[in-house]
Length: 325
Image (cartoon, rainbow, N blue to C red; front, side):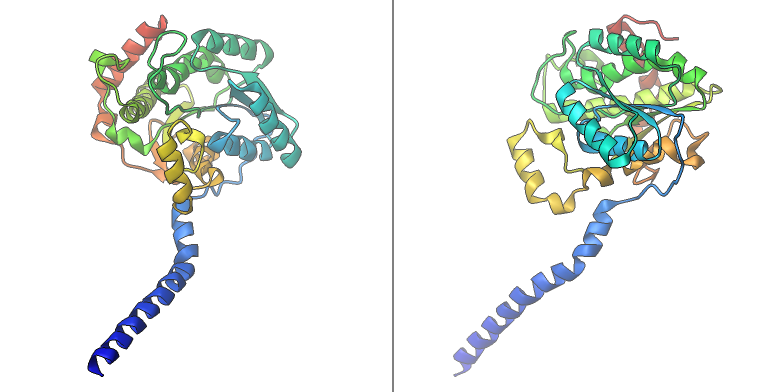
């Protein structure tokens, strides 16, 4: 009898746990989602008469950033490699926001010729540029750009470095203006390996991504220093862990992203800090900072190394064949 009673008690406890755990999760779900969603941009700033360029704006947080800024009245240039996909995104945004000034332009950040052509056409067609959002990012197996750069370094850092260089005078003439660089928390795991920038001696794509995101932070830091007094600000940000196409080249990561999507930000949630850095009135004179969830965030020690930032600047100019003093 005692054994039977113990078994009944055991099964009762198991059944109680089986029922209570799902109930607790159901009750906690809204609070978990609210925490995962992170900070929201509360600015109501309007952008009529403002011109914005967003790279990689045909999907993910770039598309959601474009949607938000178009809703605020900005003229938004969707700068992408895949024109068909970009046109579909722009058409959707125009229809939803009623803003017909959402324009698609061809830009392949893995090809410096394409970057120069984009900048040349933009400067010929547009008189002003108020916000440049360097959003496009790449996480992929080992490959090289058209110019022979390792893909992560080439697209995530050097491509945006060159684009910013080519558009900087227009930004200065349109001041006050902002440059927003989408980096990542992954910069904490990066280092600038000057002896092997292109990963020819050793390579890991995850680390290569981290290195490029650190380069974004260092570029922002040095750019802000050089732009002091111009009324052009430069800030970097971490969008959060977002359910996007960034991991599309990894079957395992894509699978994990789907399983744990509940604990990831949506693209709209992930775009909030990009929008915040682009429009928030309180950031008018803030520069050289790093944000996450619409507030200042911690930068890794390597991301605060001014000597490395200056050296990276010099090496980047050399690789791209430009003089940027």
